[in-house]
Length: 566
Image (cartoon, rainbow, N blue to C red; front, side, top):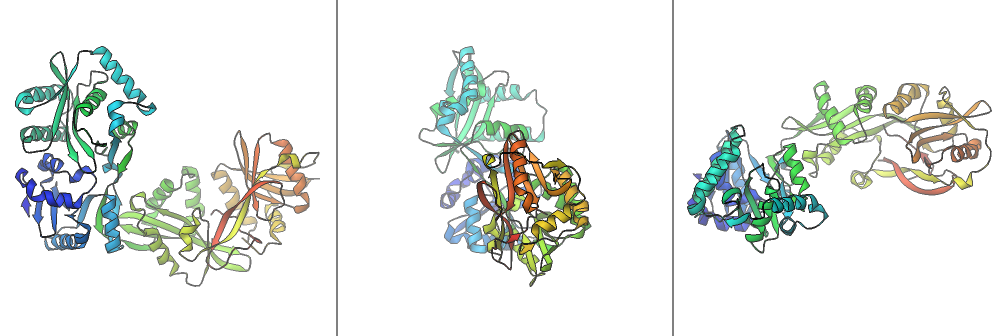
């Protein structure tokens, strides 16, 4: 390896063009302006060029600069180089096209960790230049105010020979009120490097002058894919509309014919992310890290609890602290949770517990299937699922699937449906002596009466209701009510209610009382009534079938009623 120098561009240019990567990290200008931070070294081989970074003691590779035909040759060399030189192999800032090629060649030999904080923001150049359209209204108003306040301002292309001292003096003034952080000093160093090397780099500079004084400037360079990279954009923060002005007027004068503008990443800074999103990117270039896959799978222990809980809260949007606490006190302790870990990070988790089904009392229910967002779309969950299934080779397994096709490849079939019905109120007019009460001492009896004619259903008893279903209803901010007729309980509902809708998620009833209960609902609720019931339910209204349960042993049977969440 040899240090990357400014004069090396012509040697490595053919390899940069051969790779043709999207994203600004593969821009030679960018490499050089930050080389004081990353200390890049490189090697050129017959079919590829590799670059090694050393950032604060951590060594990692850039994506190899080569064609897809020689990608494996390059990556194999990089892996061996890391091994021979005793550091952990890693490629940083990998883009999607590179990752897809890696997957085709290596399968699951490598692990890809998403880095949302490093994603490039790509904007439509015309939108930033013209500020036209509803999305640009706020920015357009700022620019109009700037023009109104400073009608005699002037845009001018900058030259290092002529304007070096102006740029340096302006930069010093604008940054004086900021704390001299390491990152700020590094940025100033990078700017000075560009200014001193502009004769060897393909960059353009432009500034806005007010009363002859430089008030804003931009430095940019061309990328592949009809894109401009904005390296530097500096302005006097006390002048309203100056940032929109320098961006707009720079694009009006420089790099004609380019379609997109790359404004780099947000580094995970909330204010910067908000500002970049408010500019309405037309696309993002996703970035990932690439590691050799040495992930491990096991059954979770006590030390894994907090990581599993964090993953649960992040991936299940309908959960909050209360419902999560319910799950981890009422379900998790007596279930088994399978996990995959990578570099001490929890990649994915699956929980399985015993569930008694009519005629299949030794069945199991799979739940809590969740993957860390950083490790999605590379088969980690499928791999963990296959690991779990080896422990249950002949067992009857159930799961609730929001995306059934994912589980069909693992041998699961859609076995039970529910019918979601929008109640036709006009079919249920008249008098009824149904009343709603809040006594829950006969729920199990009502359930047994309801399911007695079904071929398959979950076995429930009083303990299930008292210690699981009722507390779960409370934890999920749902409500439960019992229907009574002539002082006798004839059904119950678990429901969620908004100003516009009553949604009954479990509807259990004595069949002879169904019409009276529906009449009560139609007459009592001056809103839309949605009922989730078994697929043979005789209820008037527009309906759709929704998959409620999948099983690894049975096909669909309309006489099944397995309405479980967990």
